Image (cartoon, rainbow, N blue to C red; front, side, top):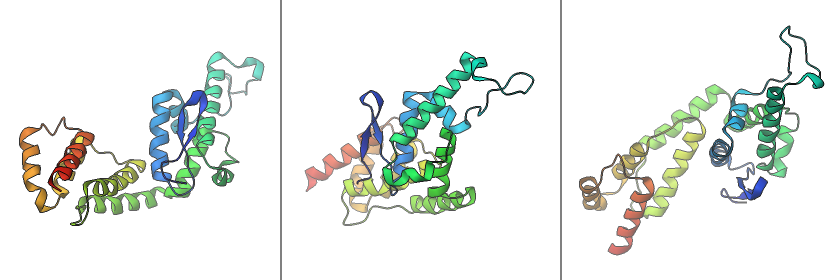
Length: 213
C-alpha cells in the first residue's frame, strides 16, 4: 500500500485508506473530506453524540419516545462511524471493534498513533524544529524538496498545528539554495506573496528548473 491509497466510499466518493503506517496523511485527508461532505458528522466525531436520549427529568427514553432530533443525532453518528470504518484497512479494524461512537473511533486512533497530549506536544516541538531548520539540499530538485517539506507540514497539521498559505510560501522561498536567489528576488518583486498559492509557486519553480537545465 502507498500513503496515497484511496478506497471507494458511498455514492462513488473516494476515501483515504488508513493502513497502519500513513496516519498523519490519513487523518488530514479524512478530516477534510468529512468536513466538506457533512459538517454535522465532523461535529459528532469531535464532540460525540448524546449516548443515551433522556427525558427532561433525566430518565432514559424508550425508542418509541425518540424525537426527530434524537434520531438525527444517532443517524449522524452511524454515518460518521461508517465513513471512518470504510477508511480503515482490515489489519487495523481490530483497534476500533469496541467503539460505539465515531468520537471513540477517532480518539482511539489518535491515542494509538499520536499518544497522550504530552506526547503530541513533544512531537509538535520536534516537527517544528524540523520546519524551522528546513532547507533545500544542494543535490535536490524542486519536486523532491517540496515532497519532503509537505511531509513535515502534513504531520504538523494532523497534530493541530496550522499555517497560513503565506507562511508556507515565504518558508519555501527562504529554504532554496543560493543558486535560486535571482529567481526568488524576481518572484518577490513580481508577485503578491499574500495571494500567491503554493501550487503557483511550485509550478513556477519547476518550470524555471526545467528551463535552466
